[in-house]
Image (cartoon, rainbow, N blue to C red; front, side, top):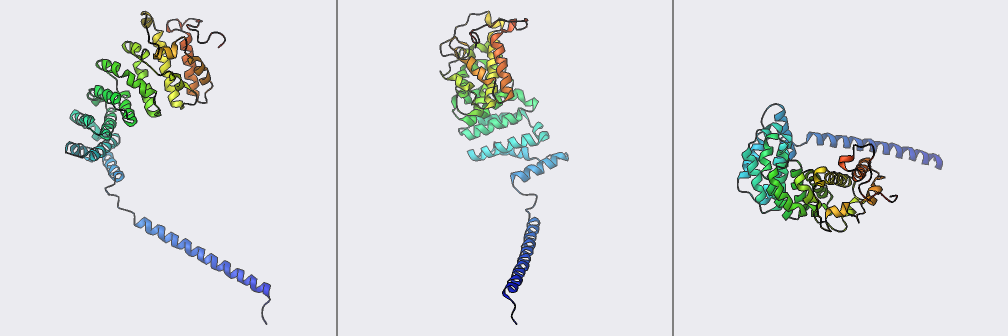
Length: 339
């Protein structure tokens, strides 16, 4: 007798399930074999890739052995190379300086001079990599004085070449060095260029530019040059709350230092005159709307921006020489009339 239709269908479903399970198990087994084979077929540890070279060099340094990699790279830089090769060599040197502390410290000032000579290369990418390498070496104390000798050259590059990557690399280097007094005349000449970079649309370059300007604002002989530097009519747009918090914070630090500097007894002892488009007029002039920007930033989402905005407000209201008094009257009309 033939089986009934429902029973046949039930057995058929069971067989399908068994077959499915078998196929699933087979797939899992094949996957396991593939993974196992892949592990066995890994490339050897010692390859020519930059990652492997760096790992080997770090491992050797960890065991007190000099990998010689940094010295080989510096020697190859002395040979005649095309622009691409020089850029790659300098990039590798930068990585080695950061990764191989002992080997980097064993370098000489002649090596710094060699890297510095790359700033005269006609290719911007070589200049940028050389700036990055000098920045790496500037973390080693014994090289700082030698690298400082390149300050005027770096300022010249930053002020004459409009390249955001070069601006970032050059300004990062300058911000990592104490700038000697002999550089101040050159700083006065490049002040307009620094202000242009600050007003550009490249956030990283803007942040580096305003950090340098904040540092220079603390120099008595440079303060007037900064305050009298010409800026665009929309300069205060930089203080809008829509700007990145990192830039706003640095701008507010800059504004606070300018405010403190101009209110210092030393600076107030002289009657200064500013041009109508100057930074001074944009920030502290009778027609300035800085107060509106500051009040908006007091409720900024980022706490460090809020705090720094409050510091600027305090510095505007209380001149430095009277800030220690129990109470101080506003020195300007910014926050008068109920503002």
